[in-house]
Structure formats: structure tokens, C-alpha cells
Image (tube, rainbow, N blue to C red; front, side, top):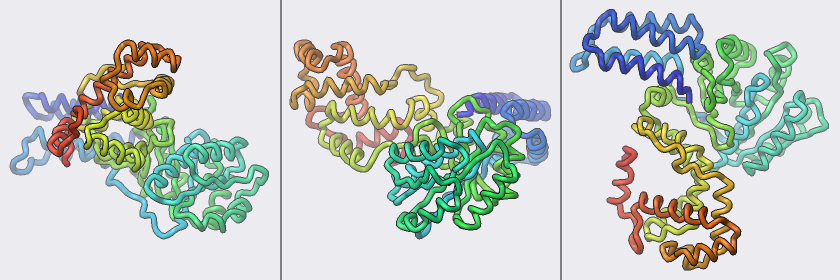
Length: 446
């Protein structure tokens, strides 16, 4: 996420950390490095120079007792970046339903996909959620919303024949009252024209949503400021959902533009899958940019990827020392929902500096399915005690499942690696001490 900006910011601070003297020359070099990094990330020129002046002014002051000049300068930069790219975390206060969240945005901003991500996010947290399609301008909008609803198992209300969004709302309004959260998809345009502005105002007046969320694409560039201010002034947005932060988008412009309004970034999209969503926290976001990790985001991903039944099943297996091949399949399947290991690793403090093999845990979906096929050709004893599987067993399993013996051997090797990682031995589960050791690897407090 924002790899180029993060690397440049880390390089700038590393220069400060390794400098022999912290003087005016070093400060000037730091400010120039920051300006270059932020401008290349599409942050508005005016905002960049305002930040530069604030850093210079604060750096002239004497550090507090117990803090060195070097530490003071790094903290000033850290705090100013948080001020520029996002402030404190803001959670939506979901009150007695139906809690209505209306999404607005331009074409191509990922509005409909973001709606499904938010629907999954809240349904996984115990809320009864529905989506309603009021985008009558884009031909495929209703179909897309319906398909996404089926995928995440969330009730979706659409009317493909009706062209009046207000009529569609009135048609389903009574049914939406049965839900805790109602997420509303509206039409977009190439820009905030008069027709779009009029339609959104009419819907806003009729629906009276508790939240109006603007989807903003990370690759919008320096146009972000005018787009955010335009929607905010005309439609009264209460928050922003920032999309496409998983790609090569510079995104600095979008983040900075959002921070100058009273509507904060609430959520960020970090991939194409429905579970690729995180709540936005400026402090931890900057920490990740600077290589410090974000365990809260990792825990959020885990909640979405793993249901309560899966978590309880794994915990029981680990406690009893019965980690089986079926447990392996379930856990790799859950990890694949969370995304590539490289994406997960950047959330763990200190892990961003570790050079991991590119193919580590990159188990493709097709291979995972073949592994599962091979398991169907195994006996109950083989599934529960894979250590007894020898070459003759592998040959039989391969013939019965039509899965190459090489892939079965690879699966068994992966099983041994994961079992060893969890510290599970035959008949012996993970003690509290074992869990503490595992947590220590990731610097997690239990």
C-alpha cells in the first residue's frame, strides 16, 4: 500500500536518524525530501508548502526534557504527516435501525464494490444488513449489486425496469425497516454535474440517511481536492471511502484532500475481494507507511476471513494436539481470503523489514481444490494422522483422486511446516506458554 511514498518517507527519516549533526542544513534537506515525496504522490502543492513551513517553524523550538533534537524532528514529521494525511480514527455509531448509509461518487470510483465490502464488514459483526440499488443511470449497476449481494449473502433490493430512484426507494422502504443497516447505492457521473447534484439532493431529502459516504479513488490525483469540496459543499458528505489503495495509485492527493474537510476517511479498500476493507486510522496508517505495522488492521482482516465456527474449531484442535489435514485446508482457505502473505506481513510490526520468499504460503485456489480432492481419497486415519502416509499410500491416493503425487507430497510438506509453526505434537496441544511464545514472534500482547 502506497509503497513508493512509504519508502521515500522512510528514507527521509532514516537520513535524520543516521545524521551526525542535526542542524539547519539537515532540516532543509529533510523538508526537500518530504516535498518531493508528497508532490510525486499527487498531494496538492499548497498543502505541501504549508506542511513544510510548519515543520520548519516547530523544529526551531527547543526539545522537551529527555528528548533529543533528532527525536524531536522525527516526531514533528510524524505528527505533521498525520495532520496532512488523516487525523484520529472515527467509527460509525450504529444506532437503532434502520441505520441508513447512502453512497455517492463519480464513475469508476468503485462505489458499488465498496458498498458490498461495507455490507460484509457489518454483517460479520452481527448486524442484519441489506443493500438497495438506486443507480438507474448505469445499465449494469443493478446486476452488479445483485451478484455481489449473492456472493456475500446479503439481502439486495433492486428493480431493473424502473428508472426513477425515488420510486424504487418508496417501493422497498417498508421492507428495509426490518434491517439494522440499509446501504444505498446511487448513480454516478463523470463529474458532479447539475443533474447528479439535483438527484442526490432529492434522495437525501427523502431518505434522510444518517451517513452520506463519498467513494474516492486513490488514483484521482490532484483533482481530489475539487471533487471532495464539490460533493461536500453540495451534498453534505459525512465520510469518505477511499478505494484502490492496493495498486500503484499515488493516493497522497486523495488522502490530503479528505483531511481538509470535516468529512473524515472512514474506510479504505485494499483489494478486489469483498473482505478487502479496513477502518481508517490516520495514526496507524502513517505508522504503516513508516514501516511500524498495524495489528488492529490485521485483526479486522482475521474477523472477516474467519467465522466463529472456524476459529473455535482451530482452537480446539490446537488445544487437543489434533491438527489434521482438514484443519490445514480450512486455515489456508481462510488465509487466501485475507490476501497475499506479503499484504498480511506489512500489518505486523517489524515484519515489513523481513525478506520473505515470494512463494511462501502463496497457495493458489486451484491447487487448494486439488488438495481437497486428494483428501477425499484418504482414509479417516490418514486424515487425522498424516504422519502414517508413505509412498504406497501417496500412489493410491493419487490414483483415486487424479491428483499428481508431487502435489500430494507438497501438501504433506506444508502440513508439517504449519504444524511445527503452531508447536503441535502428537497428543499434546498448545499450552498458554506456547501461545505466549507464538505471540512473541509477532510482538502481540496476550
